[in-house]
Image (cartoon, rainbow, N blue to C red; front, side, top):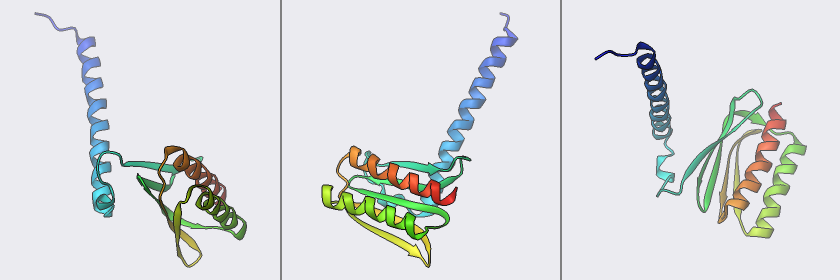
Length: 141
């Protein structure tokens, strides 16, 4: 019984890559538990997404467990008056159109968290997420 070393090498490289991805996933789950956000994720409908800048750095983590979406800002982001006004317009518009409720948590002049309630459709969620993403990217770019 002879073993083809090229096939064995490909198999081992594939297995190592797979295990690295699995390790990253477990480290990610551990970071969620350590951050204290695990109680907000209930059932199997919850999702976690990221808003990243053009360099690939994470600007915010989004925890979406319908009907609640929580945008947690990872670094200090100070919104100018015009960006804060644009953010308010997006959220107020959705409040009137789709009956969502929202709170914006600030730390002095830095935005820390945006919590949306009554987000009952993926379309509304994606629309708001895209707007917030555009504002955060421009505010940090």
